Image (cartoon, rainbow, N blue to C red; front, top):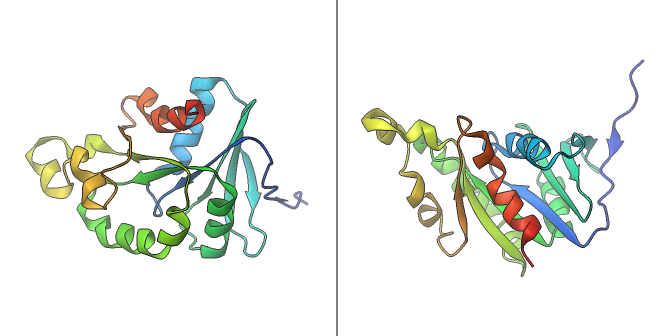
Amino acid sequence: MSAKPKVWPSPDVATRISLFGAPLSGRSEILQQTVKDLLLPAPESCVGVEVPARILLLRGQDFAAAAVVGSLYAPHEWRRVLQWSNRVLVVLDPQRPREEGIRHFLREFEPDLSLPRIRAAQVTKIDLARGTEGLQRCFPPAEVPSIFGLSNLPTFLSTNTEPSTLSAGLRYLIDAS
């Protein structure tokens, strides 16, 4: 018999970061790469308080980062994680077919995202936008934040083919004062 999953503990540390993005945007990969880059213990897998959403929690010496991961839509848990955090990394996928889903997600959580805090954007999967065919399938990566009304945020571009780029946005928020 397997152990019952741990309920998300909402750790009380000075730097609390949520990785926010529509399903399949790359939040899990960002957490996993940050573990490698900063030599941290693997993220804890927790469940939501109200629904069985999977929440990954990464703990560092002076920070914690959390993301509701997977494709389960759990707005209560997203709000809980966003309200807990004092920094937000908005993770954006440049693929054109995902545009409406991303817009819906940003609209629904706009009140939670607009709380005063340090924020940044990270555009993942930029390697998909290479070449003529890629640009037909994807928005130009550098334009993605402005397409979604986030051009005022520090922006990081990342790809799985250059793993160190995956943790750039999260490392920026960890170090921001």
